[in-house]
Length: 422
Ligand SMILES: [Zn+2]
Figure 1 (cartoon, rainbow, N blue to C red):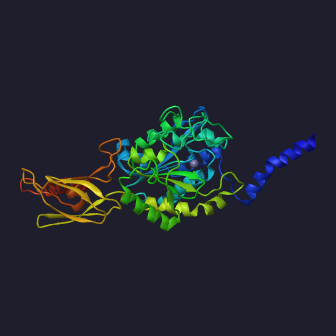
Figure 2: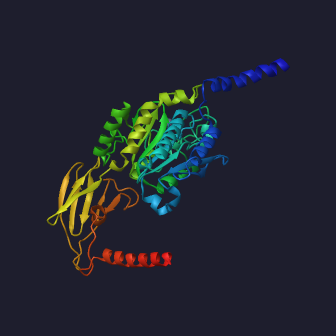
Figure 3: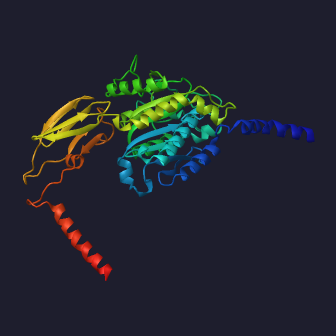
């Protein structure tokens, strides 16, 4: 009896021993939750850990980390307005390497930002390492209700590539759920994304080692992607850094279909390495995920270019020169009475300076940074201030008011200083 207990002990402990001898082993639900929370707590000025949802069985939380410069000083509204990259993983609970990719990416962005805050400037990153907590905790594709969460989103829901029958572990079917968005994991993820100004959404899966488009663009059920030129630029750059090709999705109602169709982000699945549950170490995993992580990094570094991005080049002789620096076209460029329907990527346009009735220069150029509209009319709208960007200070009633402020300030300062000397 003792021998058997000892033998069992060795068998159970062996993978742990090997793991610790070679380095840390891959995460399970509890270690990824703990490590993610700990990681965020190491960077309190730039990261906040949140539990924003619960799994179907109710016992496990769905957690995310929100990253931005001086994050605790930002209001909910300011955070919501920032260009955002969203990374999630494990809609399919048995796709472990995608969780590791999300974790590594979060860790590396935090490490880089701690030594170089400019790496975060003007942008927000949100990471949810495990969407399907129940499934991930028992190495199952579907959630505890037998639903394939990546067929459950309310965009083209059930149109193709889904099943009408629940399927539980170890089976791994594509049950779309009883209705569009029926699952609480799906709802939690949608609510989280709805609170973001999402520019890019990368959803992590494993298996085919490529990139999956939000909608089918070939064959039956093909739908035109309204921002295809932007997608092409994105896919080409992505291919250059990672070597990953792209393909149509296998089913409707995927999270990325909703991410693009409803929330207007450039949304793709990144199918990372084929590896799932094996005795690999974290170090092995980092090596195997290198090309995908290069792609994640490329997206972060170019985030504000993912769409139209109008910059003011200069103002001269009553003309304003603008250029679209983004990878996609800009739409409905509006300034005073002037409206331009489309400015291609890399194209320059000239507008006439306009004036208000009080003689001051009209400010504010607005445009749409994507062609797709999404579920909120204003979701892709951007307004830039000519005065702010060009550092223009206008005079009021002919008297430059900053100088008055300066005079008052000098007087106050000199009085204060005199008092101090007394
Ligand atoms: Zn998957």
